[in-house]
Length: 210
Image 1 (tube, rainbow, N blue to C red):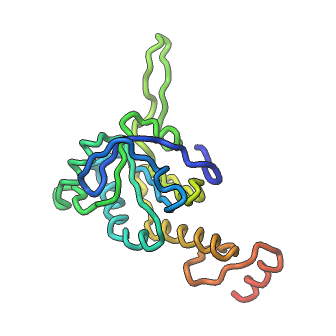
Image 2 (image 1 turned 30 degrees about the horizontal axis):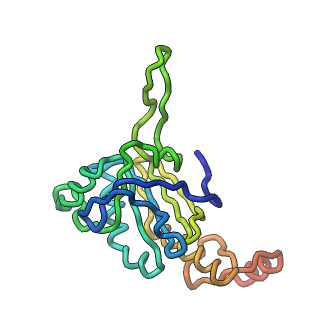
Image 3 (image 1 turned 120 degrees about the vertical axis):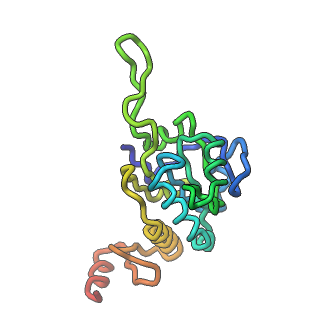
């Protein structure tokens, strides 16, 4: 698994569904450079079981991301037509109709591969045929990208393990606090908690007050 933290987020241009139902060509995260933070997350597939709980959980707290100048973008290996249909389907029928943030279609699996969250890889058989070994879906990868396009946080869960939206917001708060104040955020830091200077004296002072 590649560690992308500290590196430029892999670029892409893909078909996506925006605003809960509009299909657009050439969607790219680069449009947010210099303007917005991005939470870019992958999920295995539309019309599954854990996935709608995650996508709906992000939507329920979307205002908290917007207040922090953060854009939320989801991505799976499904087609734009599958995304569109899922977005039009009622919640009691397994849909995610209330979701309004962008869903990217990675039908070619190249975005998942470039972010190294694809749950398998292509191999050649002895006869020279191309075959896929593993599961042709993405793990539950999540990447926090700053306004300069640099990945500052990443987490990758196996498919059965749903993510924490609260933890994602905590990471956003920690990054923005560091950028604004220059102090680092200790274990289990939350917005409003004391931080510390990245020095031996700073650590000692912080620990002495716990």
